[in-house]
Length: 294
Image (cartoon, rainbow, N blue to C red):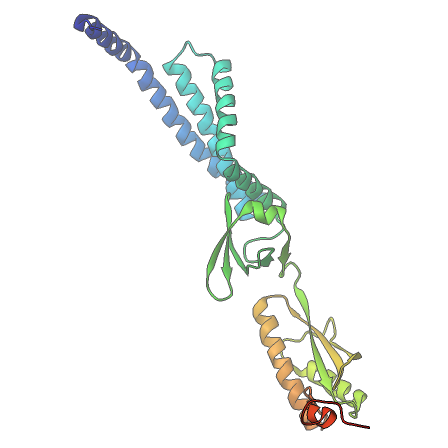
């Protein structure tokens, strides 16, 4: 099959002429699109300021303002395409975007799910930046940032965990700092011969003296919550501020002070004792393994 060079050249010339004829439209379309970009930035700042005045959380205000900006940019893109290709109607553009949106939705389903989950998390605010949470996957730490795709968590040992928002929205999340106070407890075993009332009184006195233990709600000691093999158990319960640092430090202080107080009072804190008996089978069966004669 032979190709006539003159025909090919005419086709190229026609394409060049069409492009040159579109240059004014392209220039106008670029100007319009840049104007929409600038307007999008202005709309973003305006929406963010209005959201902050309305008391909306910082991250939620950021997401809402970004969505407003992208909405303006999308409108500018449609306007620019209409200028470059006047023959293409707005209805056709919207239909094309709809079909493209469905295809993109299938291709990037996980990303879109995380995006929508992030928006819902920011709007509903089950937890906020600065809250300490534990996820169903066992990650525990402080929320650093809630993005539209993922949430950044800083663990207590200084690591960063990036958690998809879909997981946080659909699975259980324990928000440890949702309330200002948090209750802790410690079981203390004492010996059976020891005075339970004396031990409970000393434990209560100690709880009231430990820094970090709140007076309201008041601490309490539950007597005889368990009868063990070698000890009876009392349970100390107290309230602290809900952040993990206070909870951990106060629990360690309570355990130390209770141990010292019970030692000073002469109350024994026993540890399990196991007695192992070795049975000599030769005494029963004889040296040869046979049953002894009656």
